[in-house]
Image (cartoon, rainbow, N blue to C red; front, top):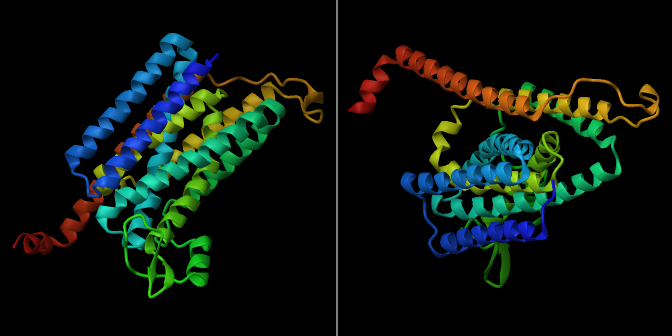
Length: 336
């Protein structure tokens, strides 16, 4: 795929412009967005991603168009899983709703920075070392196994870094928007927002470790890897407020993501074997193994996400019906 310098400049310019728009709008008027506002912005961002994918399809070829859509859907589903952790962080630190938009925006910017770094490192590694696909594939399979085993997210958002900050820094319970520290009687105190940003940043770093190998299993084009991540993160803040209640109902999302990551991991290993140059595997010769086409990968991702969503909603609906049946007087009491 040949991407001109002009295309890179336009892409980076639009990304920065969207972030600046968010920063200016949110910075001027911190508020809890309405359902209509979040739905409007989310529709725009998803529409832009679809239009961009069609543009790639038309001007760079159907193969790269498929790779973008497969990568975007995978990164979007991983970002939705990321929202579970964001919900836990917001609840754990009791972040006021008017400041949650600001905190989420910082988290998304940090995610873009970390993913940009890993995208660059991944591109260099792929160009220099063909065996890196073995590493990426094994790591994704390992991640998938852990994700399938640990389907419940820990309700404690305080990781090691946050606990260290609490132990060694002087804190205040006063919220001052995005301000990370305030002065009180001549002393500089760290605000709760600082701890929230630390928690979001460390979470973004860990998720970047999973997401970048996953998308490199679907496309080896740094431009598509970058744009798929940008579009996946653009509507994340709106999705948080629009689907906050629904997110807790996606009980099988982790299992679905585990299957997708395992599938991509196997795809990477097969690609590594097909391009093998390691002397201790088949004498350094390519191994004649089947390749998984991008169209099949896209189909597997879409079907897995659909099945996961439907099964999750059915499961939670059945659980709600059982609870209502076990507590018939609760609904009547709530209505009075």
